[in-house]
Image (tube, rainbow, N blue to C red; front, side, top):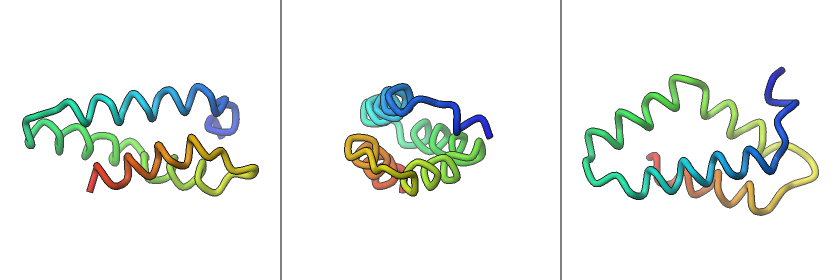
Length: 72
C-alpha cells in the first residue's frame, strides 16, 4: 500500500496545503468540483488510514478534521 510509505510530515504538508487552497476558493462551484475530485480519488480512505494510525499525530489529525469539516 503506497500510503504506508508516505512520511507523516509530507502528508501533513499536503493536507495543510489542501486546507489552505480550499479556504481561499470564493466560488462555490469550484470548491465543490475540487472536493468532489478529491473524494473520487480516495480522500476518505486516506483520511481514515491516517486517523486510525498509531501513534496518533495530533497535528495531522487536526488538519484532517479541518479538511473533513470544510469539505462537507
